[in-house]
Amino acid sequence: MPDNVLEIKGITKKFGGLTALSKLDLEVEQGSIHAIIGPNGSGKTTFFNVITGLYVPDEGSVIFCGKDVTGTVPYKMARLGMGRTFQTIFLFKQMTVLENVLIGLQSESEYKLINNMIMTPKRQLYEKELHEKAYELLAFVGLYDQRNDIACNLPYGKQRLLEVARAMGINPKIILLDEPAAGMNPQETSELIERVKNIRNKYNMTVLIIEHDMKLVMQLADTITCLDHGSVIACGNPKIVTKDSKVVEAYLGI
Ligand code: ADP
Image 1 (cartoon, rainbow, N blue to C red):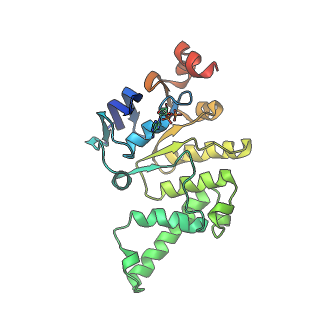
Image 2 (image 1 turned 90 degrees about the vertical axis):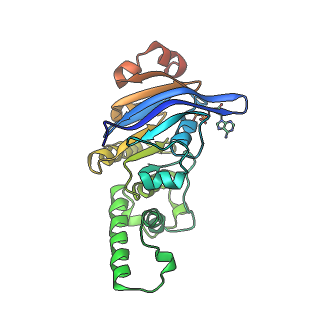
Image 3 (image 1 turned 30 degrees about the horizontal axis):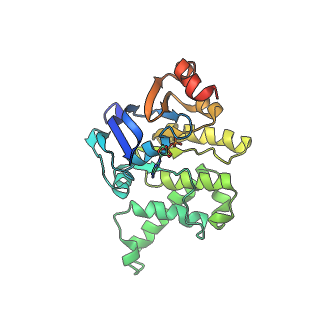
């Protein structure tokens, strides 16, 4: 595994006449928690969409685990080991909490269970393993007791945690979290901080996180990158970046 799990080189993304990302470079170190901050409209979500293959950049490349994956479609990115959550929660709302995680686990499977309706011993064992993994992830995010609830009946903050569990189900090398604390109360936010730390410490995944809650960012991030108008204006140690005059002026001062 290279030192950098992700290397972004000269990414430009335009929407018609609007340049959302401009010659953007970024390196994400293996095993780090790396936060992306910046004012609304600075290009953070567009950046995630380019990294995960939802958008094809106009220029530049995305290098993941040493391999050029620019423009690879999202489901293939997921298979390569890129998990993500969305700013707007994306769940199968009428399914149970457990089913939402099982779906994430099955998509990594080499078995085509949906096409194989015969309950062979091999399939039975496989399903048992899937359930055990789903229970473990649900316990990890604190949703084991709600496993049989319908997803849309969960409070908003817990729906976000369910998305995290589902994204972890593909056993990603890197997980991209888009504003995971949005809609959470202070208690839920402090629990989220511990969980995100353990995504790295226990599951050994690299974390790239977009977040507005600076208290959370300062407690979690090893590195901060600040975007403004689609460009990196500062990157590095959190204590230094948050004192950078450009960052204070563009984001923290408002
Ligand atoms: P952030 O996540 O930092 O708030 P975004 O990445 O959502 O910023 O947006 C960056 C810029 O790109 C904004 O000016 C936004 O209006 C524009 N933008 C984002 N997505 C689209 C799109 N699909 N079509 C047109 N413009 C877009």
